[in-house]
Amino acid sequence: MSNNIINSSHKYFQFFVFFTLLVVSGAFSHLLSSEYLLDGGRSQISLLAKLLLVFSYVAALSLFVVHWGEFKNKVTVTVWLWLALMFWATISVFIGQFNIYTLMRLAGLLGCTLIGLMLYVSTVNLTQAVKILFCVCIAITLLNLVYINGDALLGFSAKNINGVFVQKNLLGHFSLLALFITSFAFVRLSGGYRLLSLVGFGAAAWLLFLSTSMTSNLLIPIAITAILASLVVGRYKYGRYAVLIIILLLAIGLIVNWTEILSLLGKNSTFTGRTSIWSEYGALIIQRPFIGHGYGAYPEVNTALIKLGPHSGYIEQLYYTGVIGSVIMIALVVQMIKHWWQIVQDYSLAFEACFLLGFMAVFLALNLTETYFLNRSGLFWPLFIYCSLQLSWLSKKVQGALPE
Image 1 (cartoon, rainbow, N blue to C red):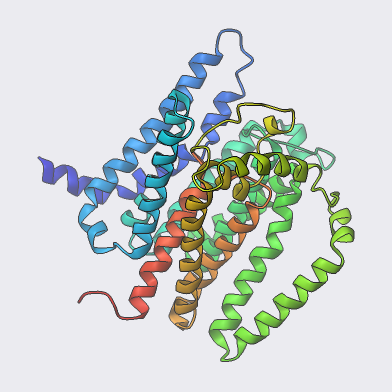
Image 2 (image 1 turned 90 degrees about the vertical axis):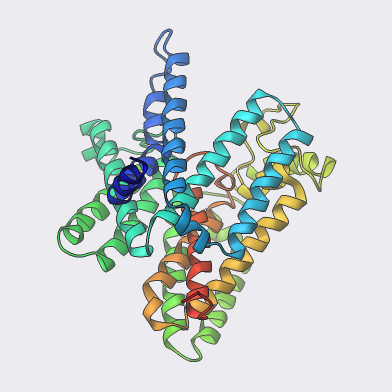
């Protein structure tokens, strides 16, 4: 009987992976959360949203167990780094702000991290992962199109639309991810997927326009630059030098014209007040710089600014896990860059090099002003984990370090 269950899971694993990613995306949780204003409904809806996440995590754990054999063959140094980061996040809770709320947040982090591991173990290659992610993005896009009022959806003057999400920025970030995924789906997939990817790209672009998320719009040229860099470095012998020179010139131009560029984006040198929030969190970080205050910890003194959250994944990670956790994260990012450099030289892996570097650039840039590091739900955190593990695996493949 157990063999039948395992065989069935292998046969229909794409559906289970699709289900777990769809639920963990947070779209349904936000959809339920929008009804919090109903009298007497807040606690029940909140419980239902948490139950949905629990079901998603259990499904991911089940798939992970079923594919345990594959996982043992795909263990790399990066896997151990992720385990070290999760171990330290757990320790930080017990030596920091230990209560039922931080324990629940820790459970959410471990569950969402498991989603990324599941995607890595359960898929054969990046193409298969992109196919599943593409279906998830199309489903959430359709959910947004149905949810948004028709007048707002079709109106050019409608702004700051949030769709099924709580904030317009969340819709913007999802729309950016959908644009990214559908673009690569068009390149890699065939048949009906290509037509659907064009439709999905157009719908995601329109949702991004309605959300007016400036952060998401700014990330588009960053993603394009990373993709082009992969192509240039991989195709031309001295392409790396050209890319480095261009990046250096752009960095100098950005530094010299910092104020003017921010004004074009409707911002100022304080990132619309975010630097004031960072300074308050900085004072808290100094109190426990090495071990942090514990994952999921809330500041004991809630000022008006701190209630808004750190508005930076880097600041939040330092506050939660201190220098120790941040050093592990830096090691992971360095590993990713190293592995990308190894695979980009292989022309047959051009698709993988472009996708993985493009997403890494978007994710790292997004965390400058948003908190997607150590996230407890959503698609960005699991996909970042998957990309790091896939880069490590492809690097071993290129170097011929895999067993026969």
